[in-house]
Amino acid sequence: MTTGPVVFDPMSLPVDDNVNKYTFCVELKSSQWLLQKGKMIAYYGRIDFNGFGRGRLDSILRTSFHSPMHAADWVVAEGSGKMLLADRAFDVNSYDLEDGNLTIRSGNLLAFQPSLALKQSIVPGFLTLIGTGKFVAASNGPVVFLEPPIRVDPQALVGWSDCPSPCHHYDHGYMTGVLGGIRSLTGLGGTSGEEHQFEFVGAGTVLLQSTEVLMAEQPTGAVPQQAGVPGGGPGTGQPGAVPRLPGQLGDLQRRFGL
Image (tube, rainbow, N blue to C red; front, side, top):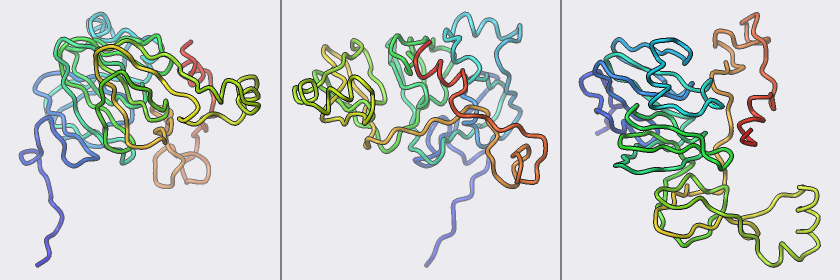
């Protein structure tokens, strides 16, 4: 006997839980969530999405969002209904903080409740959530939770909770070898996790994804160059779109923590 796909409606969708491992459902009840642009794939109900810079959202900026470098990448979702979040078929999960702090790679964070305060980490490319509340994050494969002391491949690192920021660790061969010297001087060739790691010490938890392949960066709010997408650009039947060049100033600022 064959069974068809599960068809959801507003009543059967889960409340603040996964629909499947790639999709998460947030329920709003005259409430707000902060949402990274491009992560909402559908919603039921009456939900408004507003960017920062509007007067009535100043209170959220004061209490929940303290990262001006990333402000253009985020919106406030408010109203009543159910909202589906996803990110390019990466694994998506929710996490609860209880009077804690968690630092996470900025591209992995999809959404969080305003009861949490988001701050810009001193580690480039990462953001820190502080307080009590729920947040939703994506990863390239399931997340593994590990205790320090530990050294991890930087590409596998998703974040860390309640422990000091990591320091760099380079193996002896990298520091003394010819290829390591060339790489350190020129930056050519890169390094593997066996040559260069992030070292964590102290109490806390380290979050790793189950692969060494980072989630590819994607400009938030950019219209994809695909046929059938309004504003999809030349060659898609949608005139007037200006293609976004890689490496623009905002991308460089986020990458280097400027």
